[in-house]
Image (cartoon, rainbow, N blue to C red; front, side, top):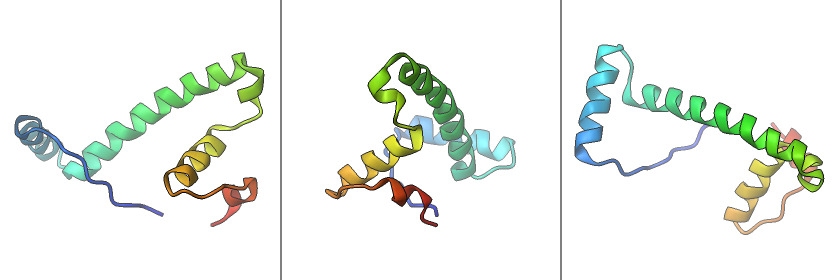
Length: 86
């Protein structure tokens, strides 16, 4: 499932993103998606290292933290079984 996200980018950065995407024969959305994936992967490893050093957090997976954050943003409680819903 994919969601729409709106972000604000100053005009100069937007123009540069469009130019780079064009040079690489990609859409701006595709380019930004790749950048987000790289950022998340780097931070997932950082988070997992922190969790290994913290016994309380070690029982929580990255996916559980993401689900909890999503539920909190909507004012809902989350359940572990929600992770396995398709």
